[in-house]
Image (cartoon, rainbow, N blue to C red; front, side, top):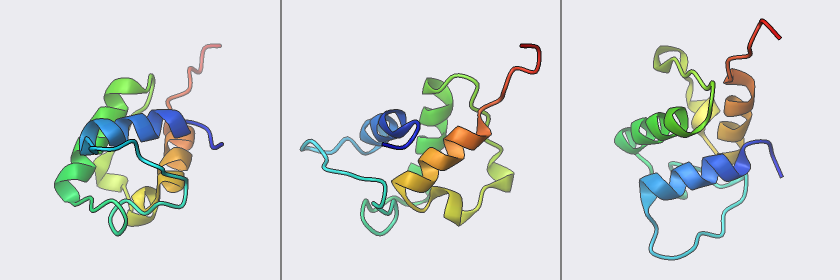
Length: 87
């Protein structure tokens, strides 16, 4: 399982509110498979920022590839968490 998979799928469930328990994996495409549009993507970004500590998302620098699949979102979250420089 990819890092942050459960956090990303929980955020997707919160945003999409599916009627049944989803059977998702990292290859699921947000737009084509889940029907997400730009408004839902914005909601997903806000949900991720609210629920994942130290995640900072600059929407101006996002690319389609970063939010194309559940797996790409997991990778994005993993690499964009603000690291504490004073460890």
